[in-house]
Length: 342
Ligand SMILES: [Zn+2]
View: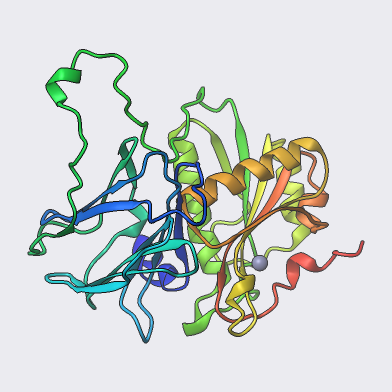
């Protein structure tokens, strides 16, 4: 099953890793000061202090191999392409739009990558590290500039409590008391209703079931009691889902869907979370949206919205419906909209 996620899902989805926050003025020069891909597969970066980075991954398509890229504020002077070696086809530095810099690492076909496990770590206020590939690939380091420049003597700082060290910026679920909180997760669709269908026949029902099982595992490990409304490909109407959640008296209800965009209109792709009413629902939607943007397959942030979907309208507890991503082609996600106007 996890192979399915790594291979199939990621052909259609890309990862967003949202990092630190200050935005530099548009006209400034690139915040990327130096970079280095080491033979052990680590990419290291040096940036201006407090730079706002956005990192993405996209599975290979007909034109490109697997690609990882990072956008930096500030404009690059000389766009360039650097030939890779080992698993890396090439490295491109460009300006995707005015005032920005993009570092693209394109991998050769058949390179095994596990982007689900990638974590960009802020080593200190202007250095970053992410492990991209396994050292089993033989790779000769490629770099521009010195990523180490400006690092203070480590020994001099060893005893200083004021040494600035950024906490790795990724999701860490808190441990909670065993079974104190309970969640009903509702994988959308199922059985004869596949939901949206992507290119290559990837079905929403399979994707959301896989994602729901993963979420269940993560939450369970942290002590949360989790029930799924369905565990396999069964035909499950909407009222039984609601009835199930209400009977379990769960603390929250989360329905998971994957939406689809029409034709080539990739601009309407994105992650969005719906709630029906109440500040608790809204808060839950906001938090889930934020966390998914941080760690999961995603796309532009389409935000938190109010929606009159049956399952979130009729459940008793704070409830949200998450659209976790997108397919390239649209087949309408009918079932959940059945009672849209009621
Ligand atoms: Zn759906």
